[in-house]
Image (cartoon, rainbow, N blue to C red; front, side, top):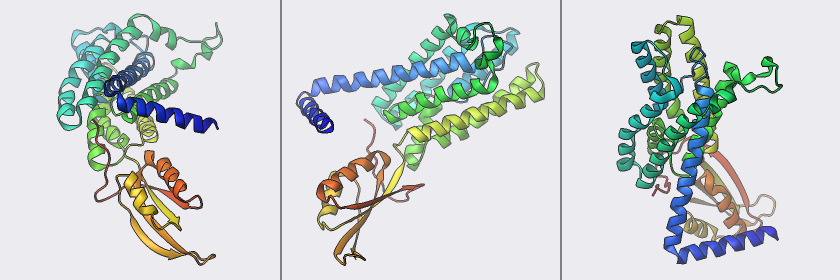
Length: 342
């Protein structure tokens, strides 16, 4: 009963927005802005509180991507001037500047809306990184004690916990952005482009690109008055960070994941109805039920992960006794339509 009311309300809202295009456009862009801001807060919190420690002598996690490149630039500048730069100023500025050519690439190669809200995310990320660092929030988080007065219960200072929290924040922010048709900027733009071109998961591309950045950062840390072992230590934990980020992105972002659906029904007209509701074709095979001996129509089609539930709902409306199997696919070769970004 509640589900029917919810569906009825949603249909009424959809009909209202269909008749009021201006309101629909405003809400569409407002939702994009809110997603970009939300993802920026998550990323900035993870970067300020867990990636860079509260003290300059602590372990600094190399994040990869544009933020990782900005870390390399900041480290190089510190090596030249011989002192630590407070409050992530260089990282904040570098993160914005380095994103400019990638945003231009995104504007021409991906989509305008994707670029606009990616730019919003990049700007807000820089702002929030400065806010978290300058207001002392990052220091308070790093020094948090679960039992006041007992420093041994402050695991947020430990390297492995910092790596996991930082990767979770980055992975969730990137995955939510991808799922909403935008990105968190930087290497995410390149990974999204190649993922769309190859019609495959985007997390692996980010891991490959970022590995080179992380290794470079580890080498510089080893040269900057640290031992070779420290550089290896930095690279080791940074790779864990990148692997967790890639895993989270590929788990949450379903846009490029594909499912093969096998549908068996006694309704001969079902394939025509299904392909009329979804932008995919199907292969039809005639068969016979082994137990009942009745004629069956069996057809195969490949859909995006986000379309599986809709296909099942449509099929059950046509035939309540329909038999459906869904099998994850690693890759599809040939023409497969994915709705382009606006």
